[in-house]
Every structure is written in C-alpha cells, then in structure tokens.
Image (tube, rainbow, N blue to C red; front, top):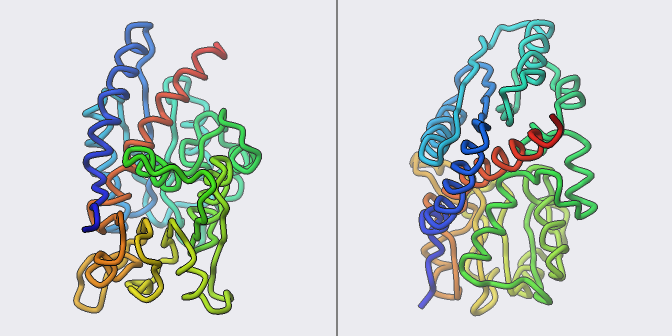
Length: 285
C-alpha cells in the first residue's frame, strides 16, 4: 500500500528546529523579521499570506504585510519596495508575483538585497542555486520538495528522477537541487515526445506543470515515488494537483496529496530562509 507523504508531518518536525534557531537569534538581540509585499488582493496571495503569517508567528518570526493598491504607479511601487529593502530591521522580503500588468518587476528584482531575497527572485540567488552555492536562497517550493524527500528517507542519489515542468519557480531550480544530490534528472515539458514513456521510467516523478490531473496512472512506473507540486482548481471548483491522485495512489510506493502535501511545507522553508538571512545579515554589521 502506498505511503502518504503528508506535509504537516514534515512541517511539524521542521518547526522544532526553526523555533530553537529563532530563540537563539533573539538571545543574541536579533529579532528575525519578514516583510510580505502584496499588490492588490488576489485570493491565492491572501491564502498563502495567511498560512505564512501563522507559520512565522508559531516559530517566533515577526511578520509584516505591506499591502499596496493595484493601481499603484511604478515609481511609488519602487519607492516603497526599496525603503523596505534598505530597512536594517527587515531580514526577509517576499514579493507576491505576478504583479499587475502595468508594473515592471525588473528594477526591484535586480536591486533586492540577495540576503533578503528569501524566495529566489534575483539573479544572484538564481546563479547560486545553479552553481550549487548553499549561501543563496533557493525558491521555497523546490526546497520544500527536498525537505519532504528527506523526511521520508527517500534518497535521490543515483535514482532516475523525472520533473514535469521547466519553470524558474519550480522545475529548473528543483532539477538543480536534485542534481546536487546526485540524482539522474530528466526535465519534461510540453514539447517532450512520448511523455508517458519518459515518466514511466522514473523512480521519482515530480509533477510541476500546473495542469489539473494531467499525470494518470499509466504514466507512473510500478512502485515509483510521486511528488505532486501542482495546485489547480478543477471544473467542479475543487482543489487538486497535477496528478490524478485516486488512480495513481495504488501504483506508487509514496505519493504526496494536494492539498496537505508540498504546499504545507513551503511556509516552513520560507521561515528557514528568514532565519538564515537574519544570521548572515547580523554578520555583516
């Protein structure tokens, strides 16, 4: 029978270590602080914001939300962002993207302090992920996948791993994290020929395409580990992943559900990055 990879179990274990680290920083006079910058009020942003604020509070990290109107000008947006970026009391900045169409994220992405860039927006952190430099921050979702694999003692070393999706948010950085752990990685996308056959060869299959239930049971090798990163809403308004969970579960050895899977770990990774940033920034002063 397949083992369900529950994000809450992973987050609970991480919480103990992170709470201890936050306490140690406070004992040194450092109050870890995250600022979330949100333009407008998209429902998915608000949902993640609620979870992130709750997680920060549980761990002992101060969390502030700067809510900006959707009609804000480019100049005002940049002025507000750079003020936060220069604030010595702020250790981590999370900018919800995509921004409204009239705003250009380029100037803030290029000038954010890489130490405060806790979800890997800037070129410096992206380069560090691709070069294997652990002083940078990887995107939170790919690192959450790695945390889940570690918790369930699934070692990617030497294994055939297929990642469906090539975005800079999940697919590409996750592939780099897996390569660093000595996995043999195949990245699939919309132009991949015979996607099903490629997926069936995988010992670990990660679905990060953003298409509801696209991964069916016949695409999964017997006994494979399946990690579902997708968050979609189906035709009936139900939250679901990229994997057809009910059909896939019987043929897997481990599988993560949606919801209550990888997404439940992401805010814990965010907290981990804020604490790491607080430590690094304290050394600079």
